[in-house]
Length: 325
Image 1: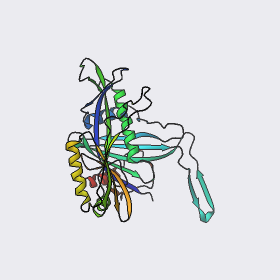
Image 2: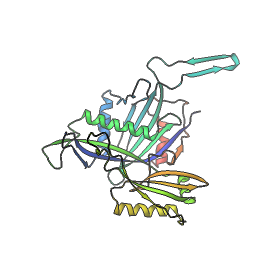
Image 3: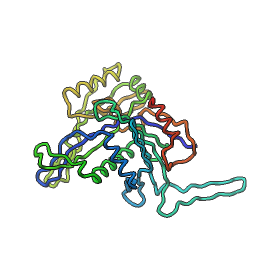
Image 4: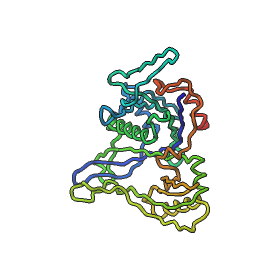
């Protein structure tokens, strides 16, 4: 029997105005479109016959595509499929009859896996954080990192398909039109085990991370660019107490005095084991971390299969029950 898990994230949507000019590129923060508007663009592309394929880097690499899509007043449901050419051929057997059959994949085919991605339309905090639940088969390769990469490709597809809708005026030169480029980030809801580890352990190190200078050229040829800046925080060995409260205080200080720093990488020790995690300074949620993210094992498996041709109403019903709908 296959095991399928449900993971809970906040999906943060951001946007920038961009225009590539050789000597004077334009790049500035701007308000993103709301998720309902983006969903209608995705739906229009999909119902027009385009499966929003994200091809692999080479013929042996997995590709990802949209197999099914549903949009209603409260949510967006995407069935994201992964085609993996390197997935092994299935083998069935009947030992009593000493029979074994290899089910070889046809030429051009790969092993197929599905993930149900549910995005709630009402923001959970501010205007651009949305609850996102990812359901997938254990071992399918459809992690939150892979889903995030695929959704970014979908956003880029929308911008290319509807250029006029994704064009805005420059804030300094309104007559100049720039690209309205969207991005997303996942912040995992901390699991109970992660919170217990923090509460029972002690903090051994922390770094605040600033990504505002990403891509800045540091040499004349542009071959060396900035990745990120950090502030290393020293943790006194005498610090004993509530690690969660300490982290909350650190985040509050960073938000008020170091606003350009967005993430906090922490190291802590619990039950004799060293562990690490990365948190959003703004929300305290986990950054792209399936290992510590709140999850539930799916109980309503209706077929023992890795992939679906349509959104499973049974799986969707269980996902919505965990959301509280």
